Amino acid sequence: MAMDALFLLLPISLLFVLGIGVAFWWAIFAGQFDDTRDAATAILDDDDRPHPGEA
Amino acid sequence: MTDAMRSARRHMLARTGLAWLVMMQVMMLAFPGYLRHGARAPDAQQSLEQAIVLMNWLSLILCVPLVLYCAWPVWRGAWRALSRWRVGMDVPVALGILAAFVPSVVATWRDAGEVYFDSVSMFVAFLLTARFLETCARQAVSGQARGGSDAELLHAADRLAFRFVCAQILLAVLVGLYWWNVQPDQAVAVTVALLVMSCPCALSMSVPAALAARHAASLRAGDAGVPDAAALDRAMRRVARQNLHGSLAWHLLMAPLAACGWVQPWVAAITMLLSSLAVAANAWRLSRLPPGAAAERRPTVRRANAMPG
Image (cartoon, rainbow over the protein chains, first blue to last red):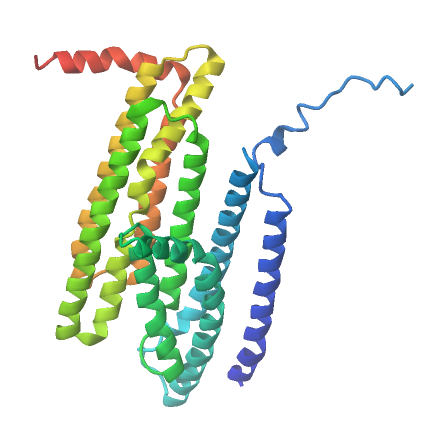
């Protein structure tokens, strides 16, 4: 019956939501959303001069 | 940005993001409830009713962390205001959440009556989104408010919002009592819609957003070498005035519709988000002003002023 599938699938979806919430929480407090603007241009501001120690 | 500001912004982002996650789940789970009053075979109707009970319980489980964690700043702010015998911005919001959440919990427990979990989660998510934008705007201008006139403008807007909140709570209570006497099954929905609408999100965001946009515009103008502070100030005041008048007009337009029972709580929550986003977008327009434009606009304004006189 359709109802039996619901009883299985809805708790699974609840677990997924929990996992996504925890991952999102971790990402925020790891600082991943602190600077969303400068990260995109950081590669352009790179220092391209050759390192003095390398040949 | 100081550590305290960064931490505050992270916490707000976490609460806002989790509220959006919960909101999307609860909206999905609320869907069978909207199908309840259609015509179908008795056995199909029975399994639909079973599904609705299951989904109401899941919505309840999802809404508990939303109400306790995501809406925590609202409870804190409301408690602070009430313990000093005052009515802050958080009081109508707290009342709105309680007025929708408690009857829904009771209805789920008793398996009878309407649930408003979708309205609760949408209200909290949209409210936190508006607050997050406001926090970003206030943080961008902290320490940069230019002297007394900016502080005065901020204070005037806050005072206006406060008076509006008092009037709206009174209206919600009176209209709720009226509906309770005339049509009790509609009373909760109408009261919740009015309380959702009484939240002055757009109103309290209008001036800080304009100040932040002026700050961003003056940085850009400074880069281009044409900082015209006076013209920018005028543009900022114009945007702040537009924001204030626009959000007031939204309140005045929506409140009668909600009082008549034509606005569902979730529609009220969506229009609340739209008004906040409109305020933010209007302020953003100012910060995108090309550096020369503020200066060019001045002669036109003068001519317009000179014409009638």
